[in-house]
Image (spheres, one colour):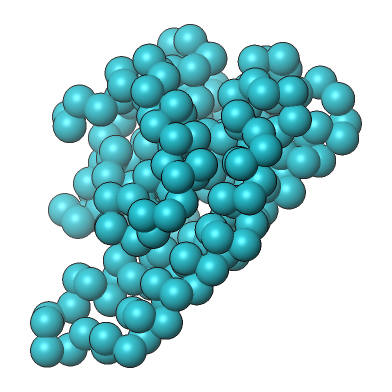
Length: 203
């Protein structure tokens, strides 16, 4: 059986979403890094970085959410993973954009917000917010004005899942501009999916 290590209040939730979409049986080991649960000798033997998530399938161990999701989805092509090479390339393009362009600014705002109020650099936060709004406004919003989902063909794929998990954080941090109506509607379509709803239990 597949095992996925990591708690839901992390990028692990992306992997749990894929597992649910694919209807795979798995065991979820909910490790809380804030309690030192990712620094045990047992876990470090699986993932020496002490980070989450980690996927284990028999003797195969895989880390990093994007790699895990690609492994799971590509093993079941036609559901989340398209069969055409160009569609796969587009999927990888959007996923790369999400994690290399959009995500760093989102994470920066989140981490700065965890500092004591008097230590928060308001100017940097506003600059990151402006970057996020520009990336969404220049790239994602006009694309979704022409498409129901991210890839041509109007099907929900791993590109939507990887991106929606991140844009959901953008919205929860109040960083999604009001004028992003196409992005908002796309996000609601993604988050309304039964697979996402099934993993919303806080446990």
